[in-house]
Image (cartoon, rainbow, N blue to C red; front, side):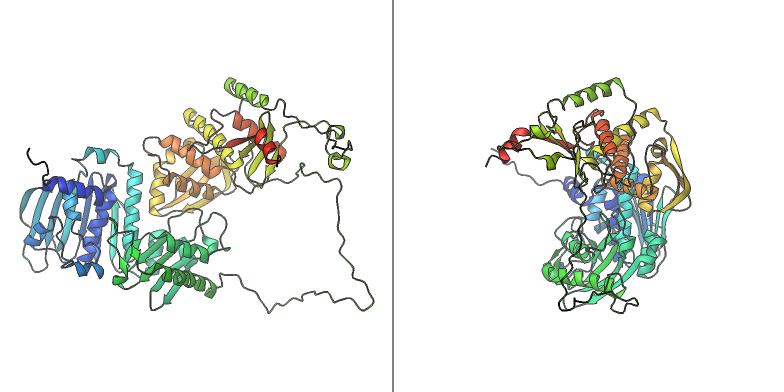
Length: 619
């Protein structure tokens, strides 16, 4: 019997390695830019076409390579930064594994032009699918110039699963942000399809943050600087009042390298405890300096997950550094002991005088089922009733048969035969409409034939809005409510490109949004079916929901926009609804094609059977 174990060919091994290192065009950008930084470049230019699927060109003015080094750079595990295993525990450079260029060359058409400062001519190497096509001298400027064309041309399965251009470009922008922030002294340029997205001059850290994320962030930045024997924490955090409803401006760096760390993120969020509006996220750009021997950056192929030797000791340092910075800048509320006004403190009664207890006002006519308060959210408009809706509504009404409450005193007597007139004195005998109760300003309770129905009010509204938006997108006609005072919104380049890609569909939904300068938009109108008091907040939430969607937005773009807008526009928890609004919400929900679940598959309602309720009282 012949042997069956064989060594993989180099080309196949490189493609397998590429599956770990190169996941999308942004991975190529990350690896090549990091190599440029290690080469001592002070200026890096990134040209992108079709979000990197067609072309990625990265040029730098670094030290360049000799002809031998240029050829060796494409071999697996070839690196200039590691000599022995001990070097892995004192790494301060970026690219060190020696897998990036070999992986890229295995799945793309790669051209390298490089030249050292003292050389008369440079070196050209052309590789396609790990096969060297050309190698020889060439005239070129000092530094290195990489052209990566037709990424994943020989791995169609991987290319097929790339997302749309807006999504892939978003990932590229994120990688540039993660590299540009810890290197403010280096000039970066990012150009996509001939349009300049970033022109970042060499500057200080604060100016680099503002150049990346907009001038509006400048006034919210608070300096952080804390140095201990374990770790040094520096950078900037945002003031709570400037916190946003969307994530994207939260960055941790260790020794100049970007990292994700949920444990340290929790330390920052706890420092903001009771200072943030609900569902808001503060900005932070925190840099940790620590002994390289106390961390392991080689635990993940992308090197964004870093293991700390003493993370439990670092957690309180990060928390205290953020909390102290908030306190120094008078962000944390404090007690003012030098009040100018007089505090009226009642004197104790004189001897012989009795203590006067406070009067308690009781309203015997109070009915908890009559709420006169209104909420600040949008109102619910009942859509035109179709045949399907009439059928659904008829089925909904059938649920109430046999669920009428016995409200007359004589029908609710105890074992002794005595009635309870006080309990039912204020409940009318003839009760019109559905029996509903809003619980915790989150759930709607209503009795049905089989028990008690509990409806999640936010999810119900999401389902209603989603189906209305889908109908609007099909008809391409909707009334737009023009704003009396148009709102201006400034976005970071990633969100700006995303908004541009979906503007046409937003116009179909009734939004009137136009570009108003670089990364700035003006909102002049919103869908007439929505009662929108803060259109810029709706747009921010829409972009956040759209970015975080697990669905391929390219395949189902319109449905995804409808879903994202429904989630962004739905009423929030904590809103008190009038009875008429509750009734309209229920009617509109059961007029939907799928009332039981939200568009993304979450349960909208549940029914607690009467048997279960009775069992809970049987003991």
